[in-house]
Length: 133
Image (cartoon, rainbow, N blue to C red; front, side, top):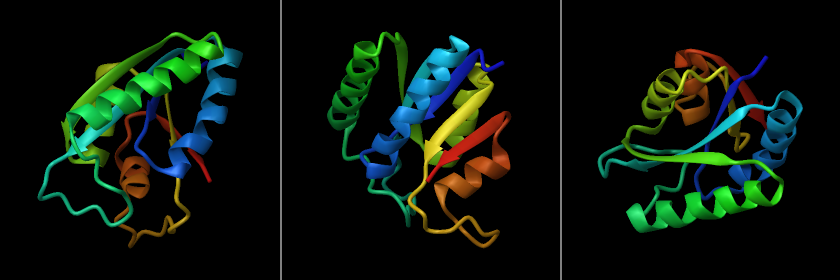
């Protein structure tokens, strides 16, 4: 059902908490796991996220995430990109032919007026999106 799962991560608690759900879904469906982190452009407004500081920070974050999943017997691919997070997540989902994006949510609201990355991904995604509160 879910051949490829994309898991966009940042340094937030919401990302860490979503990892358990990712583990369950990937193991249940024997999915390919792609972990993505986005280095934001300096001029990108990010009201709900802590900007990823630099390439070294992202590389370490991705390596740590890959190791955590490896401990669960899951081999993950990692991708680092630069850009506007919501658009980059959706572009990568399309590139890797993802069937599902699993994201954490900070609980700041998913109303139509919301400018959150999560809300934008929900509206722009080329595939299903599972939000983990």
